Amino acid sequence: QVQLVESGGGLVQAGGSLRLSCVASGRTFSIYSMGWFRRAPGKEREFVASISGSGSRTDYADSVKGRFTISRDNAKNTVYLQMASLEPEDTAVYYCNTQRFPSGSLPRVGGVYWGQGTQVTVSS
Image: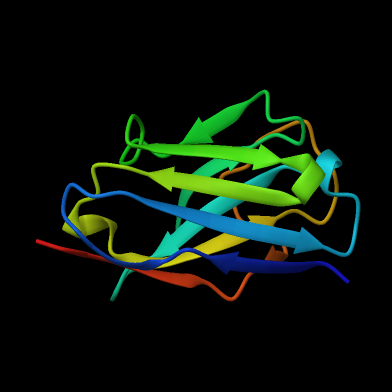
């Protein structure tokens, strides 16, 4: 059974930084792409970033490109989202996500496995 557990959220002032972590368990971590999504109050969940199993390829939403960095440590079964220059518009619950099957692509549509989410609040 695949489990994803996020941590690292919190309250930060605009312009600040946070690093989110997601620890995965239940299967071989390194062969699956991983992604981060977020849901802001009153909005639908949206794609933020994704990374291939090896970590060699990444993809970002335009809204976070240049500010957020996704990375992974396969030895620790962990994917990270380093967030910098945070804006109030980044306030949301952030979710870790992965697909059911290995794939060579980096989909922007969430797969079947989701974490419980971690709240990020950016004050102005």
